[in-house]
Length: 87
Image 1 (cartoon, rainbow, N blue to C red):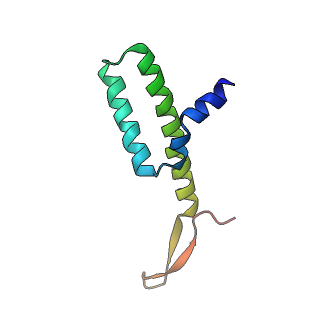
Image 2: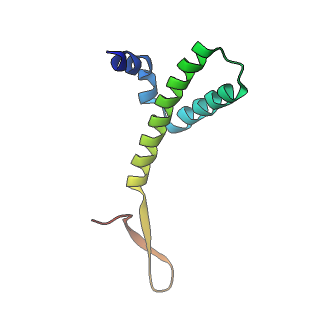
């Protein structure tokens, strides 16, 4: 039950673009490193940071899956694209 409550609390993270999620995550890291946050607040922002980290990781995995390798012609000029990891 606690996992569902935690997921609901951070539902907005699931729709965040990478740059926004990363920016907020960096802000959280700065706050926590500063050490001037009460314990209860530290726990709450740490949990949000975990949700943001997972979002960033998922977006990076998705982007990596779409990355293509540029194929080169004999003269060195780009001639097309191929999947990064052909299967």
